[in-house]
Length: 422
Ligand SMILES: [Zn+2]
Ligand SMILES: [Zn+2]
Figure 1 (cartoon, protein in one colour):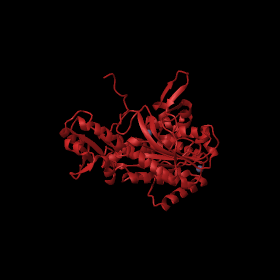
Figure 2 (cartoon, helix red, strand yellow; figure 1 turned 60 degrees about the vertical axis):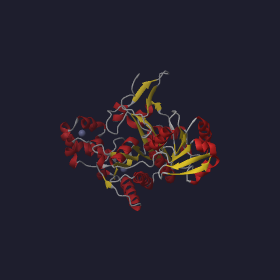
Figure 3 (cartoon, helix red, strand yellow; figure 1 turned 90 degrees about the vertical axis):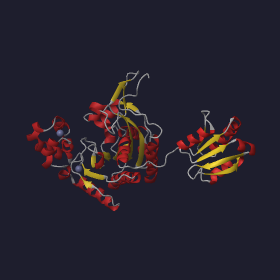
Figure 4 (cartoon, protein in one colour; figure 1 turned 45 degrees about the vertical axis):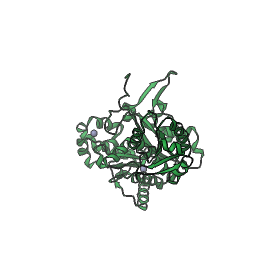
């Protein structure tokens, strides 16, 4: 073998790919029902988009981006997430000129140079939604409702929706000041990350996973203590809308996002039974992001989930991924004379939108039947020597073990009567 696939990437093989299709089908369907349209942006962008749009103090930008200089001497980055790209497209393609709000969704691969671990890869896949143009707290609630509805449809249970408000540029400076006053005497006891965050991004100290930082921060002021009137009434409306839809939530005052362009709502969906890294999706409002990316002041809110983590969570909960997508019909032939008939009939069956296959390995009739059984087809169409003489085929229902003689010309309509080809 010449080489292997790069660390942190996966081949999604037949047998596995059906799970992905199952997820994607659910995602596309729910987006249609909630009024979201699909957008597909490039896999790579100019690096400065992510420096600004993700934030150059984030771990993603500091440590995890796949960045390279292309042959035209431009700095290019494989997208580490998709919100910045969608914002760029919203501006570049003038989607702000459409009736607002503009509601978009995406599904695709993202790239981060991270240490691979369970459910985390260097090429991973995200589903996400973005809504532009509305300040309405009902939109925040709708995005959360849709994500919870998606998980419910997939059969995931024991999920918790954690909600918080992270304030706005008006009230956040007050919070930052209070946090720095609170943590300053403990600065030397915080972990290295938090010591770095103290100046740049003190909100993030609140959601540090290190026990000592959690212990020190137990009485720290939280976002909710410092919200301005506008922020607290927005938050109250978000919660009211969730209650209107009977969606359970936990108010989580430690749920923060450090960057200035995140405003108001932050949320995360947690699956306690997938272990320490239990988040299966999250999002929030980013009213400052469009402006940071060079546009006018337009509000936005989004949500994203990692597909690999959802599959992992579903497997841990013992869920299935819908019916297997194998072929429905297998044509079994006795000899060379019947082989020509098999080619003709196979084409006719497939043309009627029924999935079908035949032997290509010169197997005996018995071996073909065994193979058909192994692949799990619903029906075998058997053309033996007698059938060739009579111009018929034996159509065998593999599940019931019953078979019937059918004229060759009527095999397609017979299969349709059995409910195939819909
Ligand atoms: Zn505020
Ligand atoms: Zn820490």
